[in-house]
Image 1: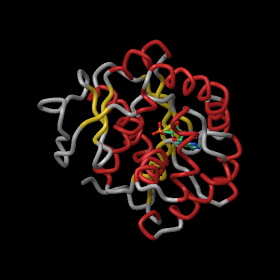
Image 2 (image 1 turned 135 degrees about the vertical axis):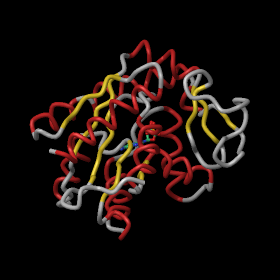
Image 3 (image 1 turned 60 degrees about the horizontal axis):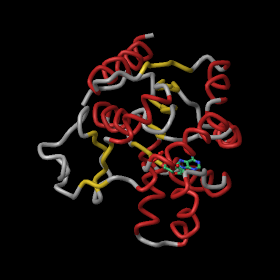
Image 4 (image 1 turned 180 degrees about the horizontal axis):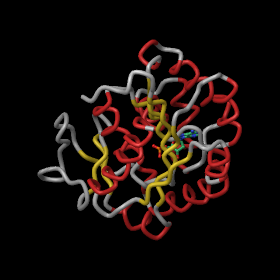
Length: 223
Ligand code: AMP
């Protein structure tokens, strides 16, 4: 664990298309700086698996690659961010994804330190998604080539079985990319105008993207 500069908190957002590596970088940064990672996608997948009311509502959106309605997502995030463990920092993976969500985050008075935008072009996303696997138990994300486990069948963190997410099927990936370009990409400009956006070009090798990401964070902490 690294200590944060005392005067600076890390309240981070990871932005970028599906499959760019937001979840993986979030996990690494979360561990390194000891700040909680909040993945709305993981919260929704858990709810779907456990068949809660939220899960039943969210399933049709998640499975087809659409966004779950803003009002549902905003409530979940506001509640999560009000918890004590978020007071000194957090990472939002996959939130906000619409201008309404970004406005709600501003209205909640949450001061974001940095928005790290991971850029990967659509063709690379489609190629990478074919090899993406997730742990059916703890949700950790892997790639059979770029971030493999010893056998690509079991999770190195908890031993759970690795599966392909239903929404990583090629036809769903296309819808998710369309949704990303229409609804989420405009947030790049939104945060650029606030002066807090930093873009990292997603690299083939996970550790190269991590090095660029940590560089952005360290520059912020030093600055
Ligand atoms: P992810 O794991 O971030 O790729 O998210 C998986 C799915 O969860 C998305 O395709 C959406 O259906 C839903 N989802 C995740 N984040 C959001 C969000 N901020 N707003 C609405 N829906 C979301």
